[in-house]
Amino acid sequence: MFKKLYQQTNPKIWTGRVDSENDPDQFRYHQVAKCVDLNDLDDSEEVALLGFASDVGVKRNHGRVGAAGGPDFFRETVGALCWHSQRDRFIDVGNIVPAGDDLEGAQETLGKAVHSLLDKNKKTFVIGGGHETAFGHYLGIASFLKEKDPEAKLGILNIDAHFDLRDNDIASSGTPFLQAHQHAEANHIDLKYLVYGINTQNNTRHLFNTAQKWGVEYCTNEEIFQHESDALQTVRYFLQSRTHIYLTVCLDVFYAAMAPGVSAPAWNGIRLSHAQKVLDFVRRSGLLISMDVCELNPTYDEHQKTAKVAAMLFSEMVR
Image (cartoon, rainbow, N blue to C red):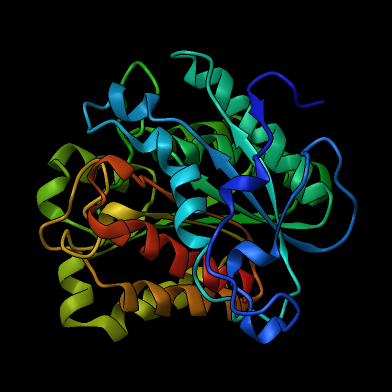
């Protein structure tokens, strides 16, 4: 089924220190990662890691390219970290890789891959790649829900400094959530969108007007710093209004010293602890259908700081 644009992971990429070969209490991520062909999935319930090795959308959006290397860089970094999950393992099902500049074709393939994973009872974690990852990811979730639960109320919860609601003529890392709204409207999908961490200085007045037009809810970084409990209450109300949550995290939401390896570093970003509280709410709600982390750019990642932030977010999914 998946041949074009699909690359299975080479297991040799998963490396790290070995404290024990048979005591699970001493295992690291590389010892519990199992590489599986996306075309050969069983129906067991487990976490599946899928990469989207694209920065075509970042280039189109005039950002710093390099995020195409994010998925494999993530694997190289997280492999050596200590495993604390109660799960025995997670599976790595490889990467979707665009053919040249054909972002649209890659997003369509990503959507089909996500649909397939959800259909096989997988808790899907997609590692990007630029935030153009989100539209392909959304397509997979939307098609799965349309088939399995047509009355679903889908919520996109985006932890991000940007709305990514640009109305450009061509798709990019700045357009995925406007595309999602347009797709949902055309296909009669009940969709709501909340952004947590908006940096006012990084979003034009036009983008705020677009957010208002589509009924987008948001919490700014300043609101989170000064009134975090109120911001978290906004998240609670949002969760209560939905039946399924697609959680997406753009690493440029975090302050630059903590996450330098992104396409657009934040000079006044939120902290990891802020995001972890939101993840905890989502996890406890039982509504999470799928998750991704985007904009990991190894070219600019000093001491693997950003990759390790991504790893911490992944750990919330697998625990």
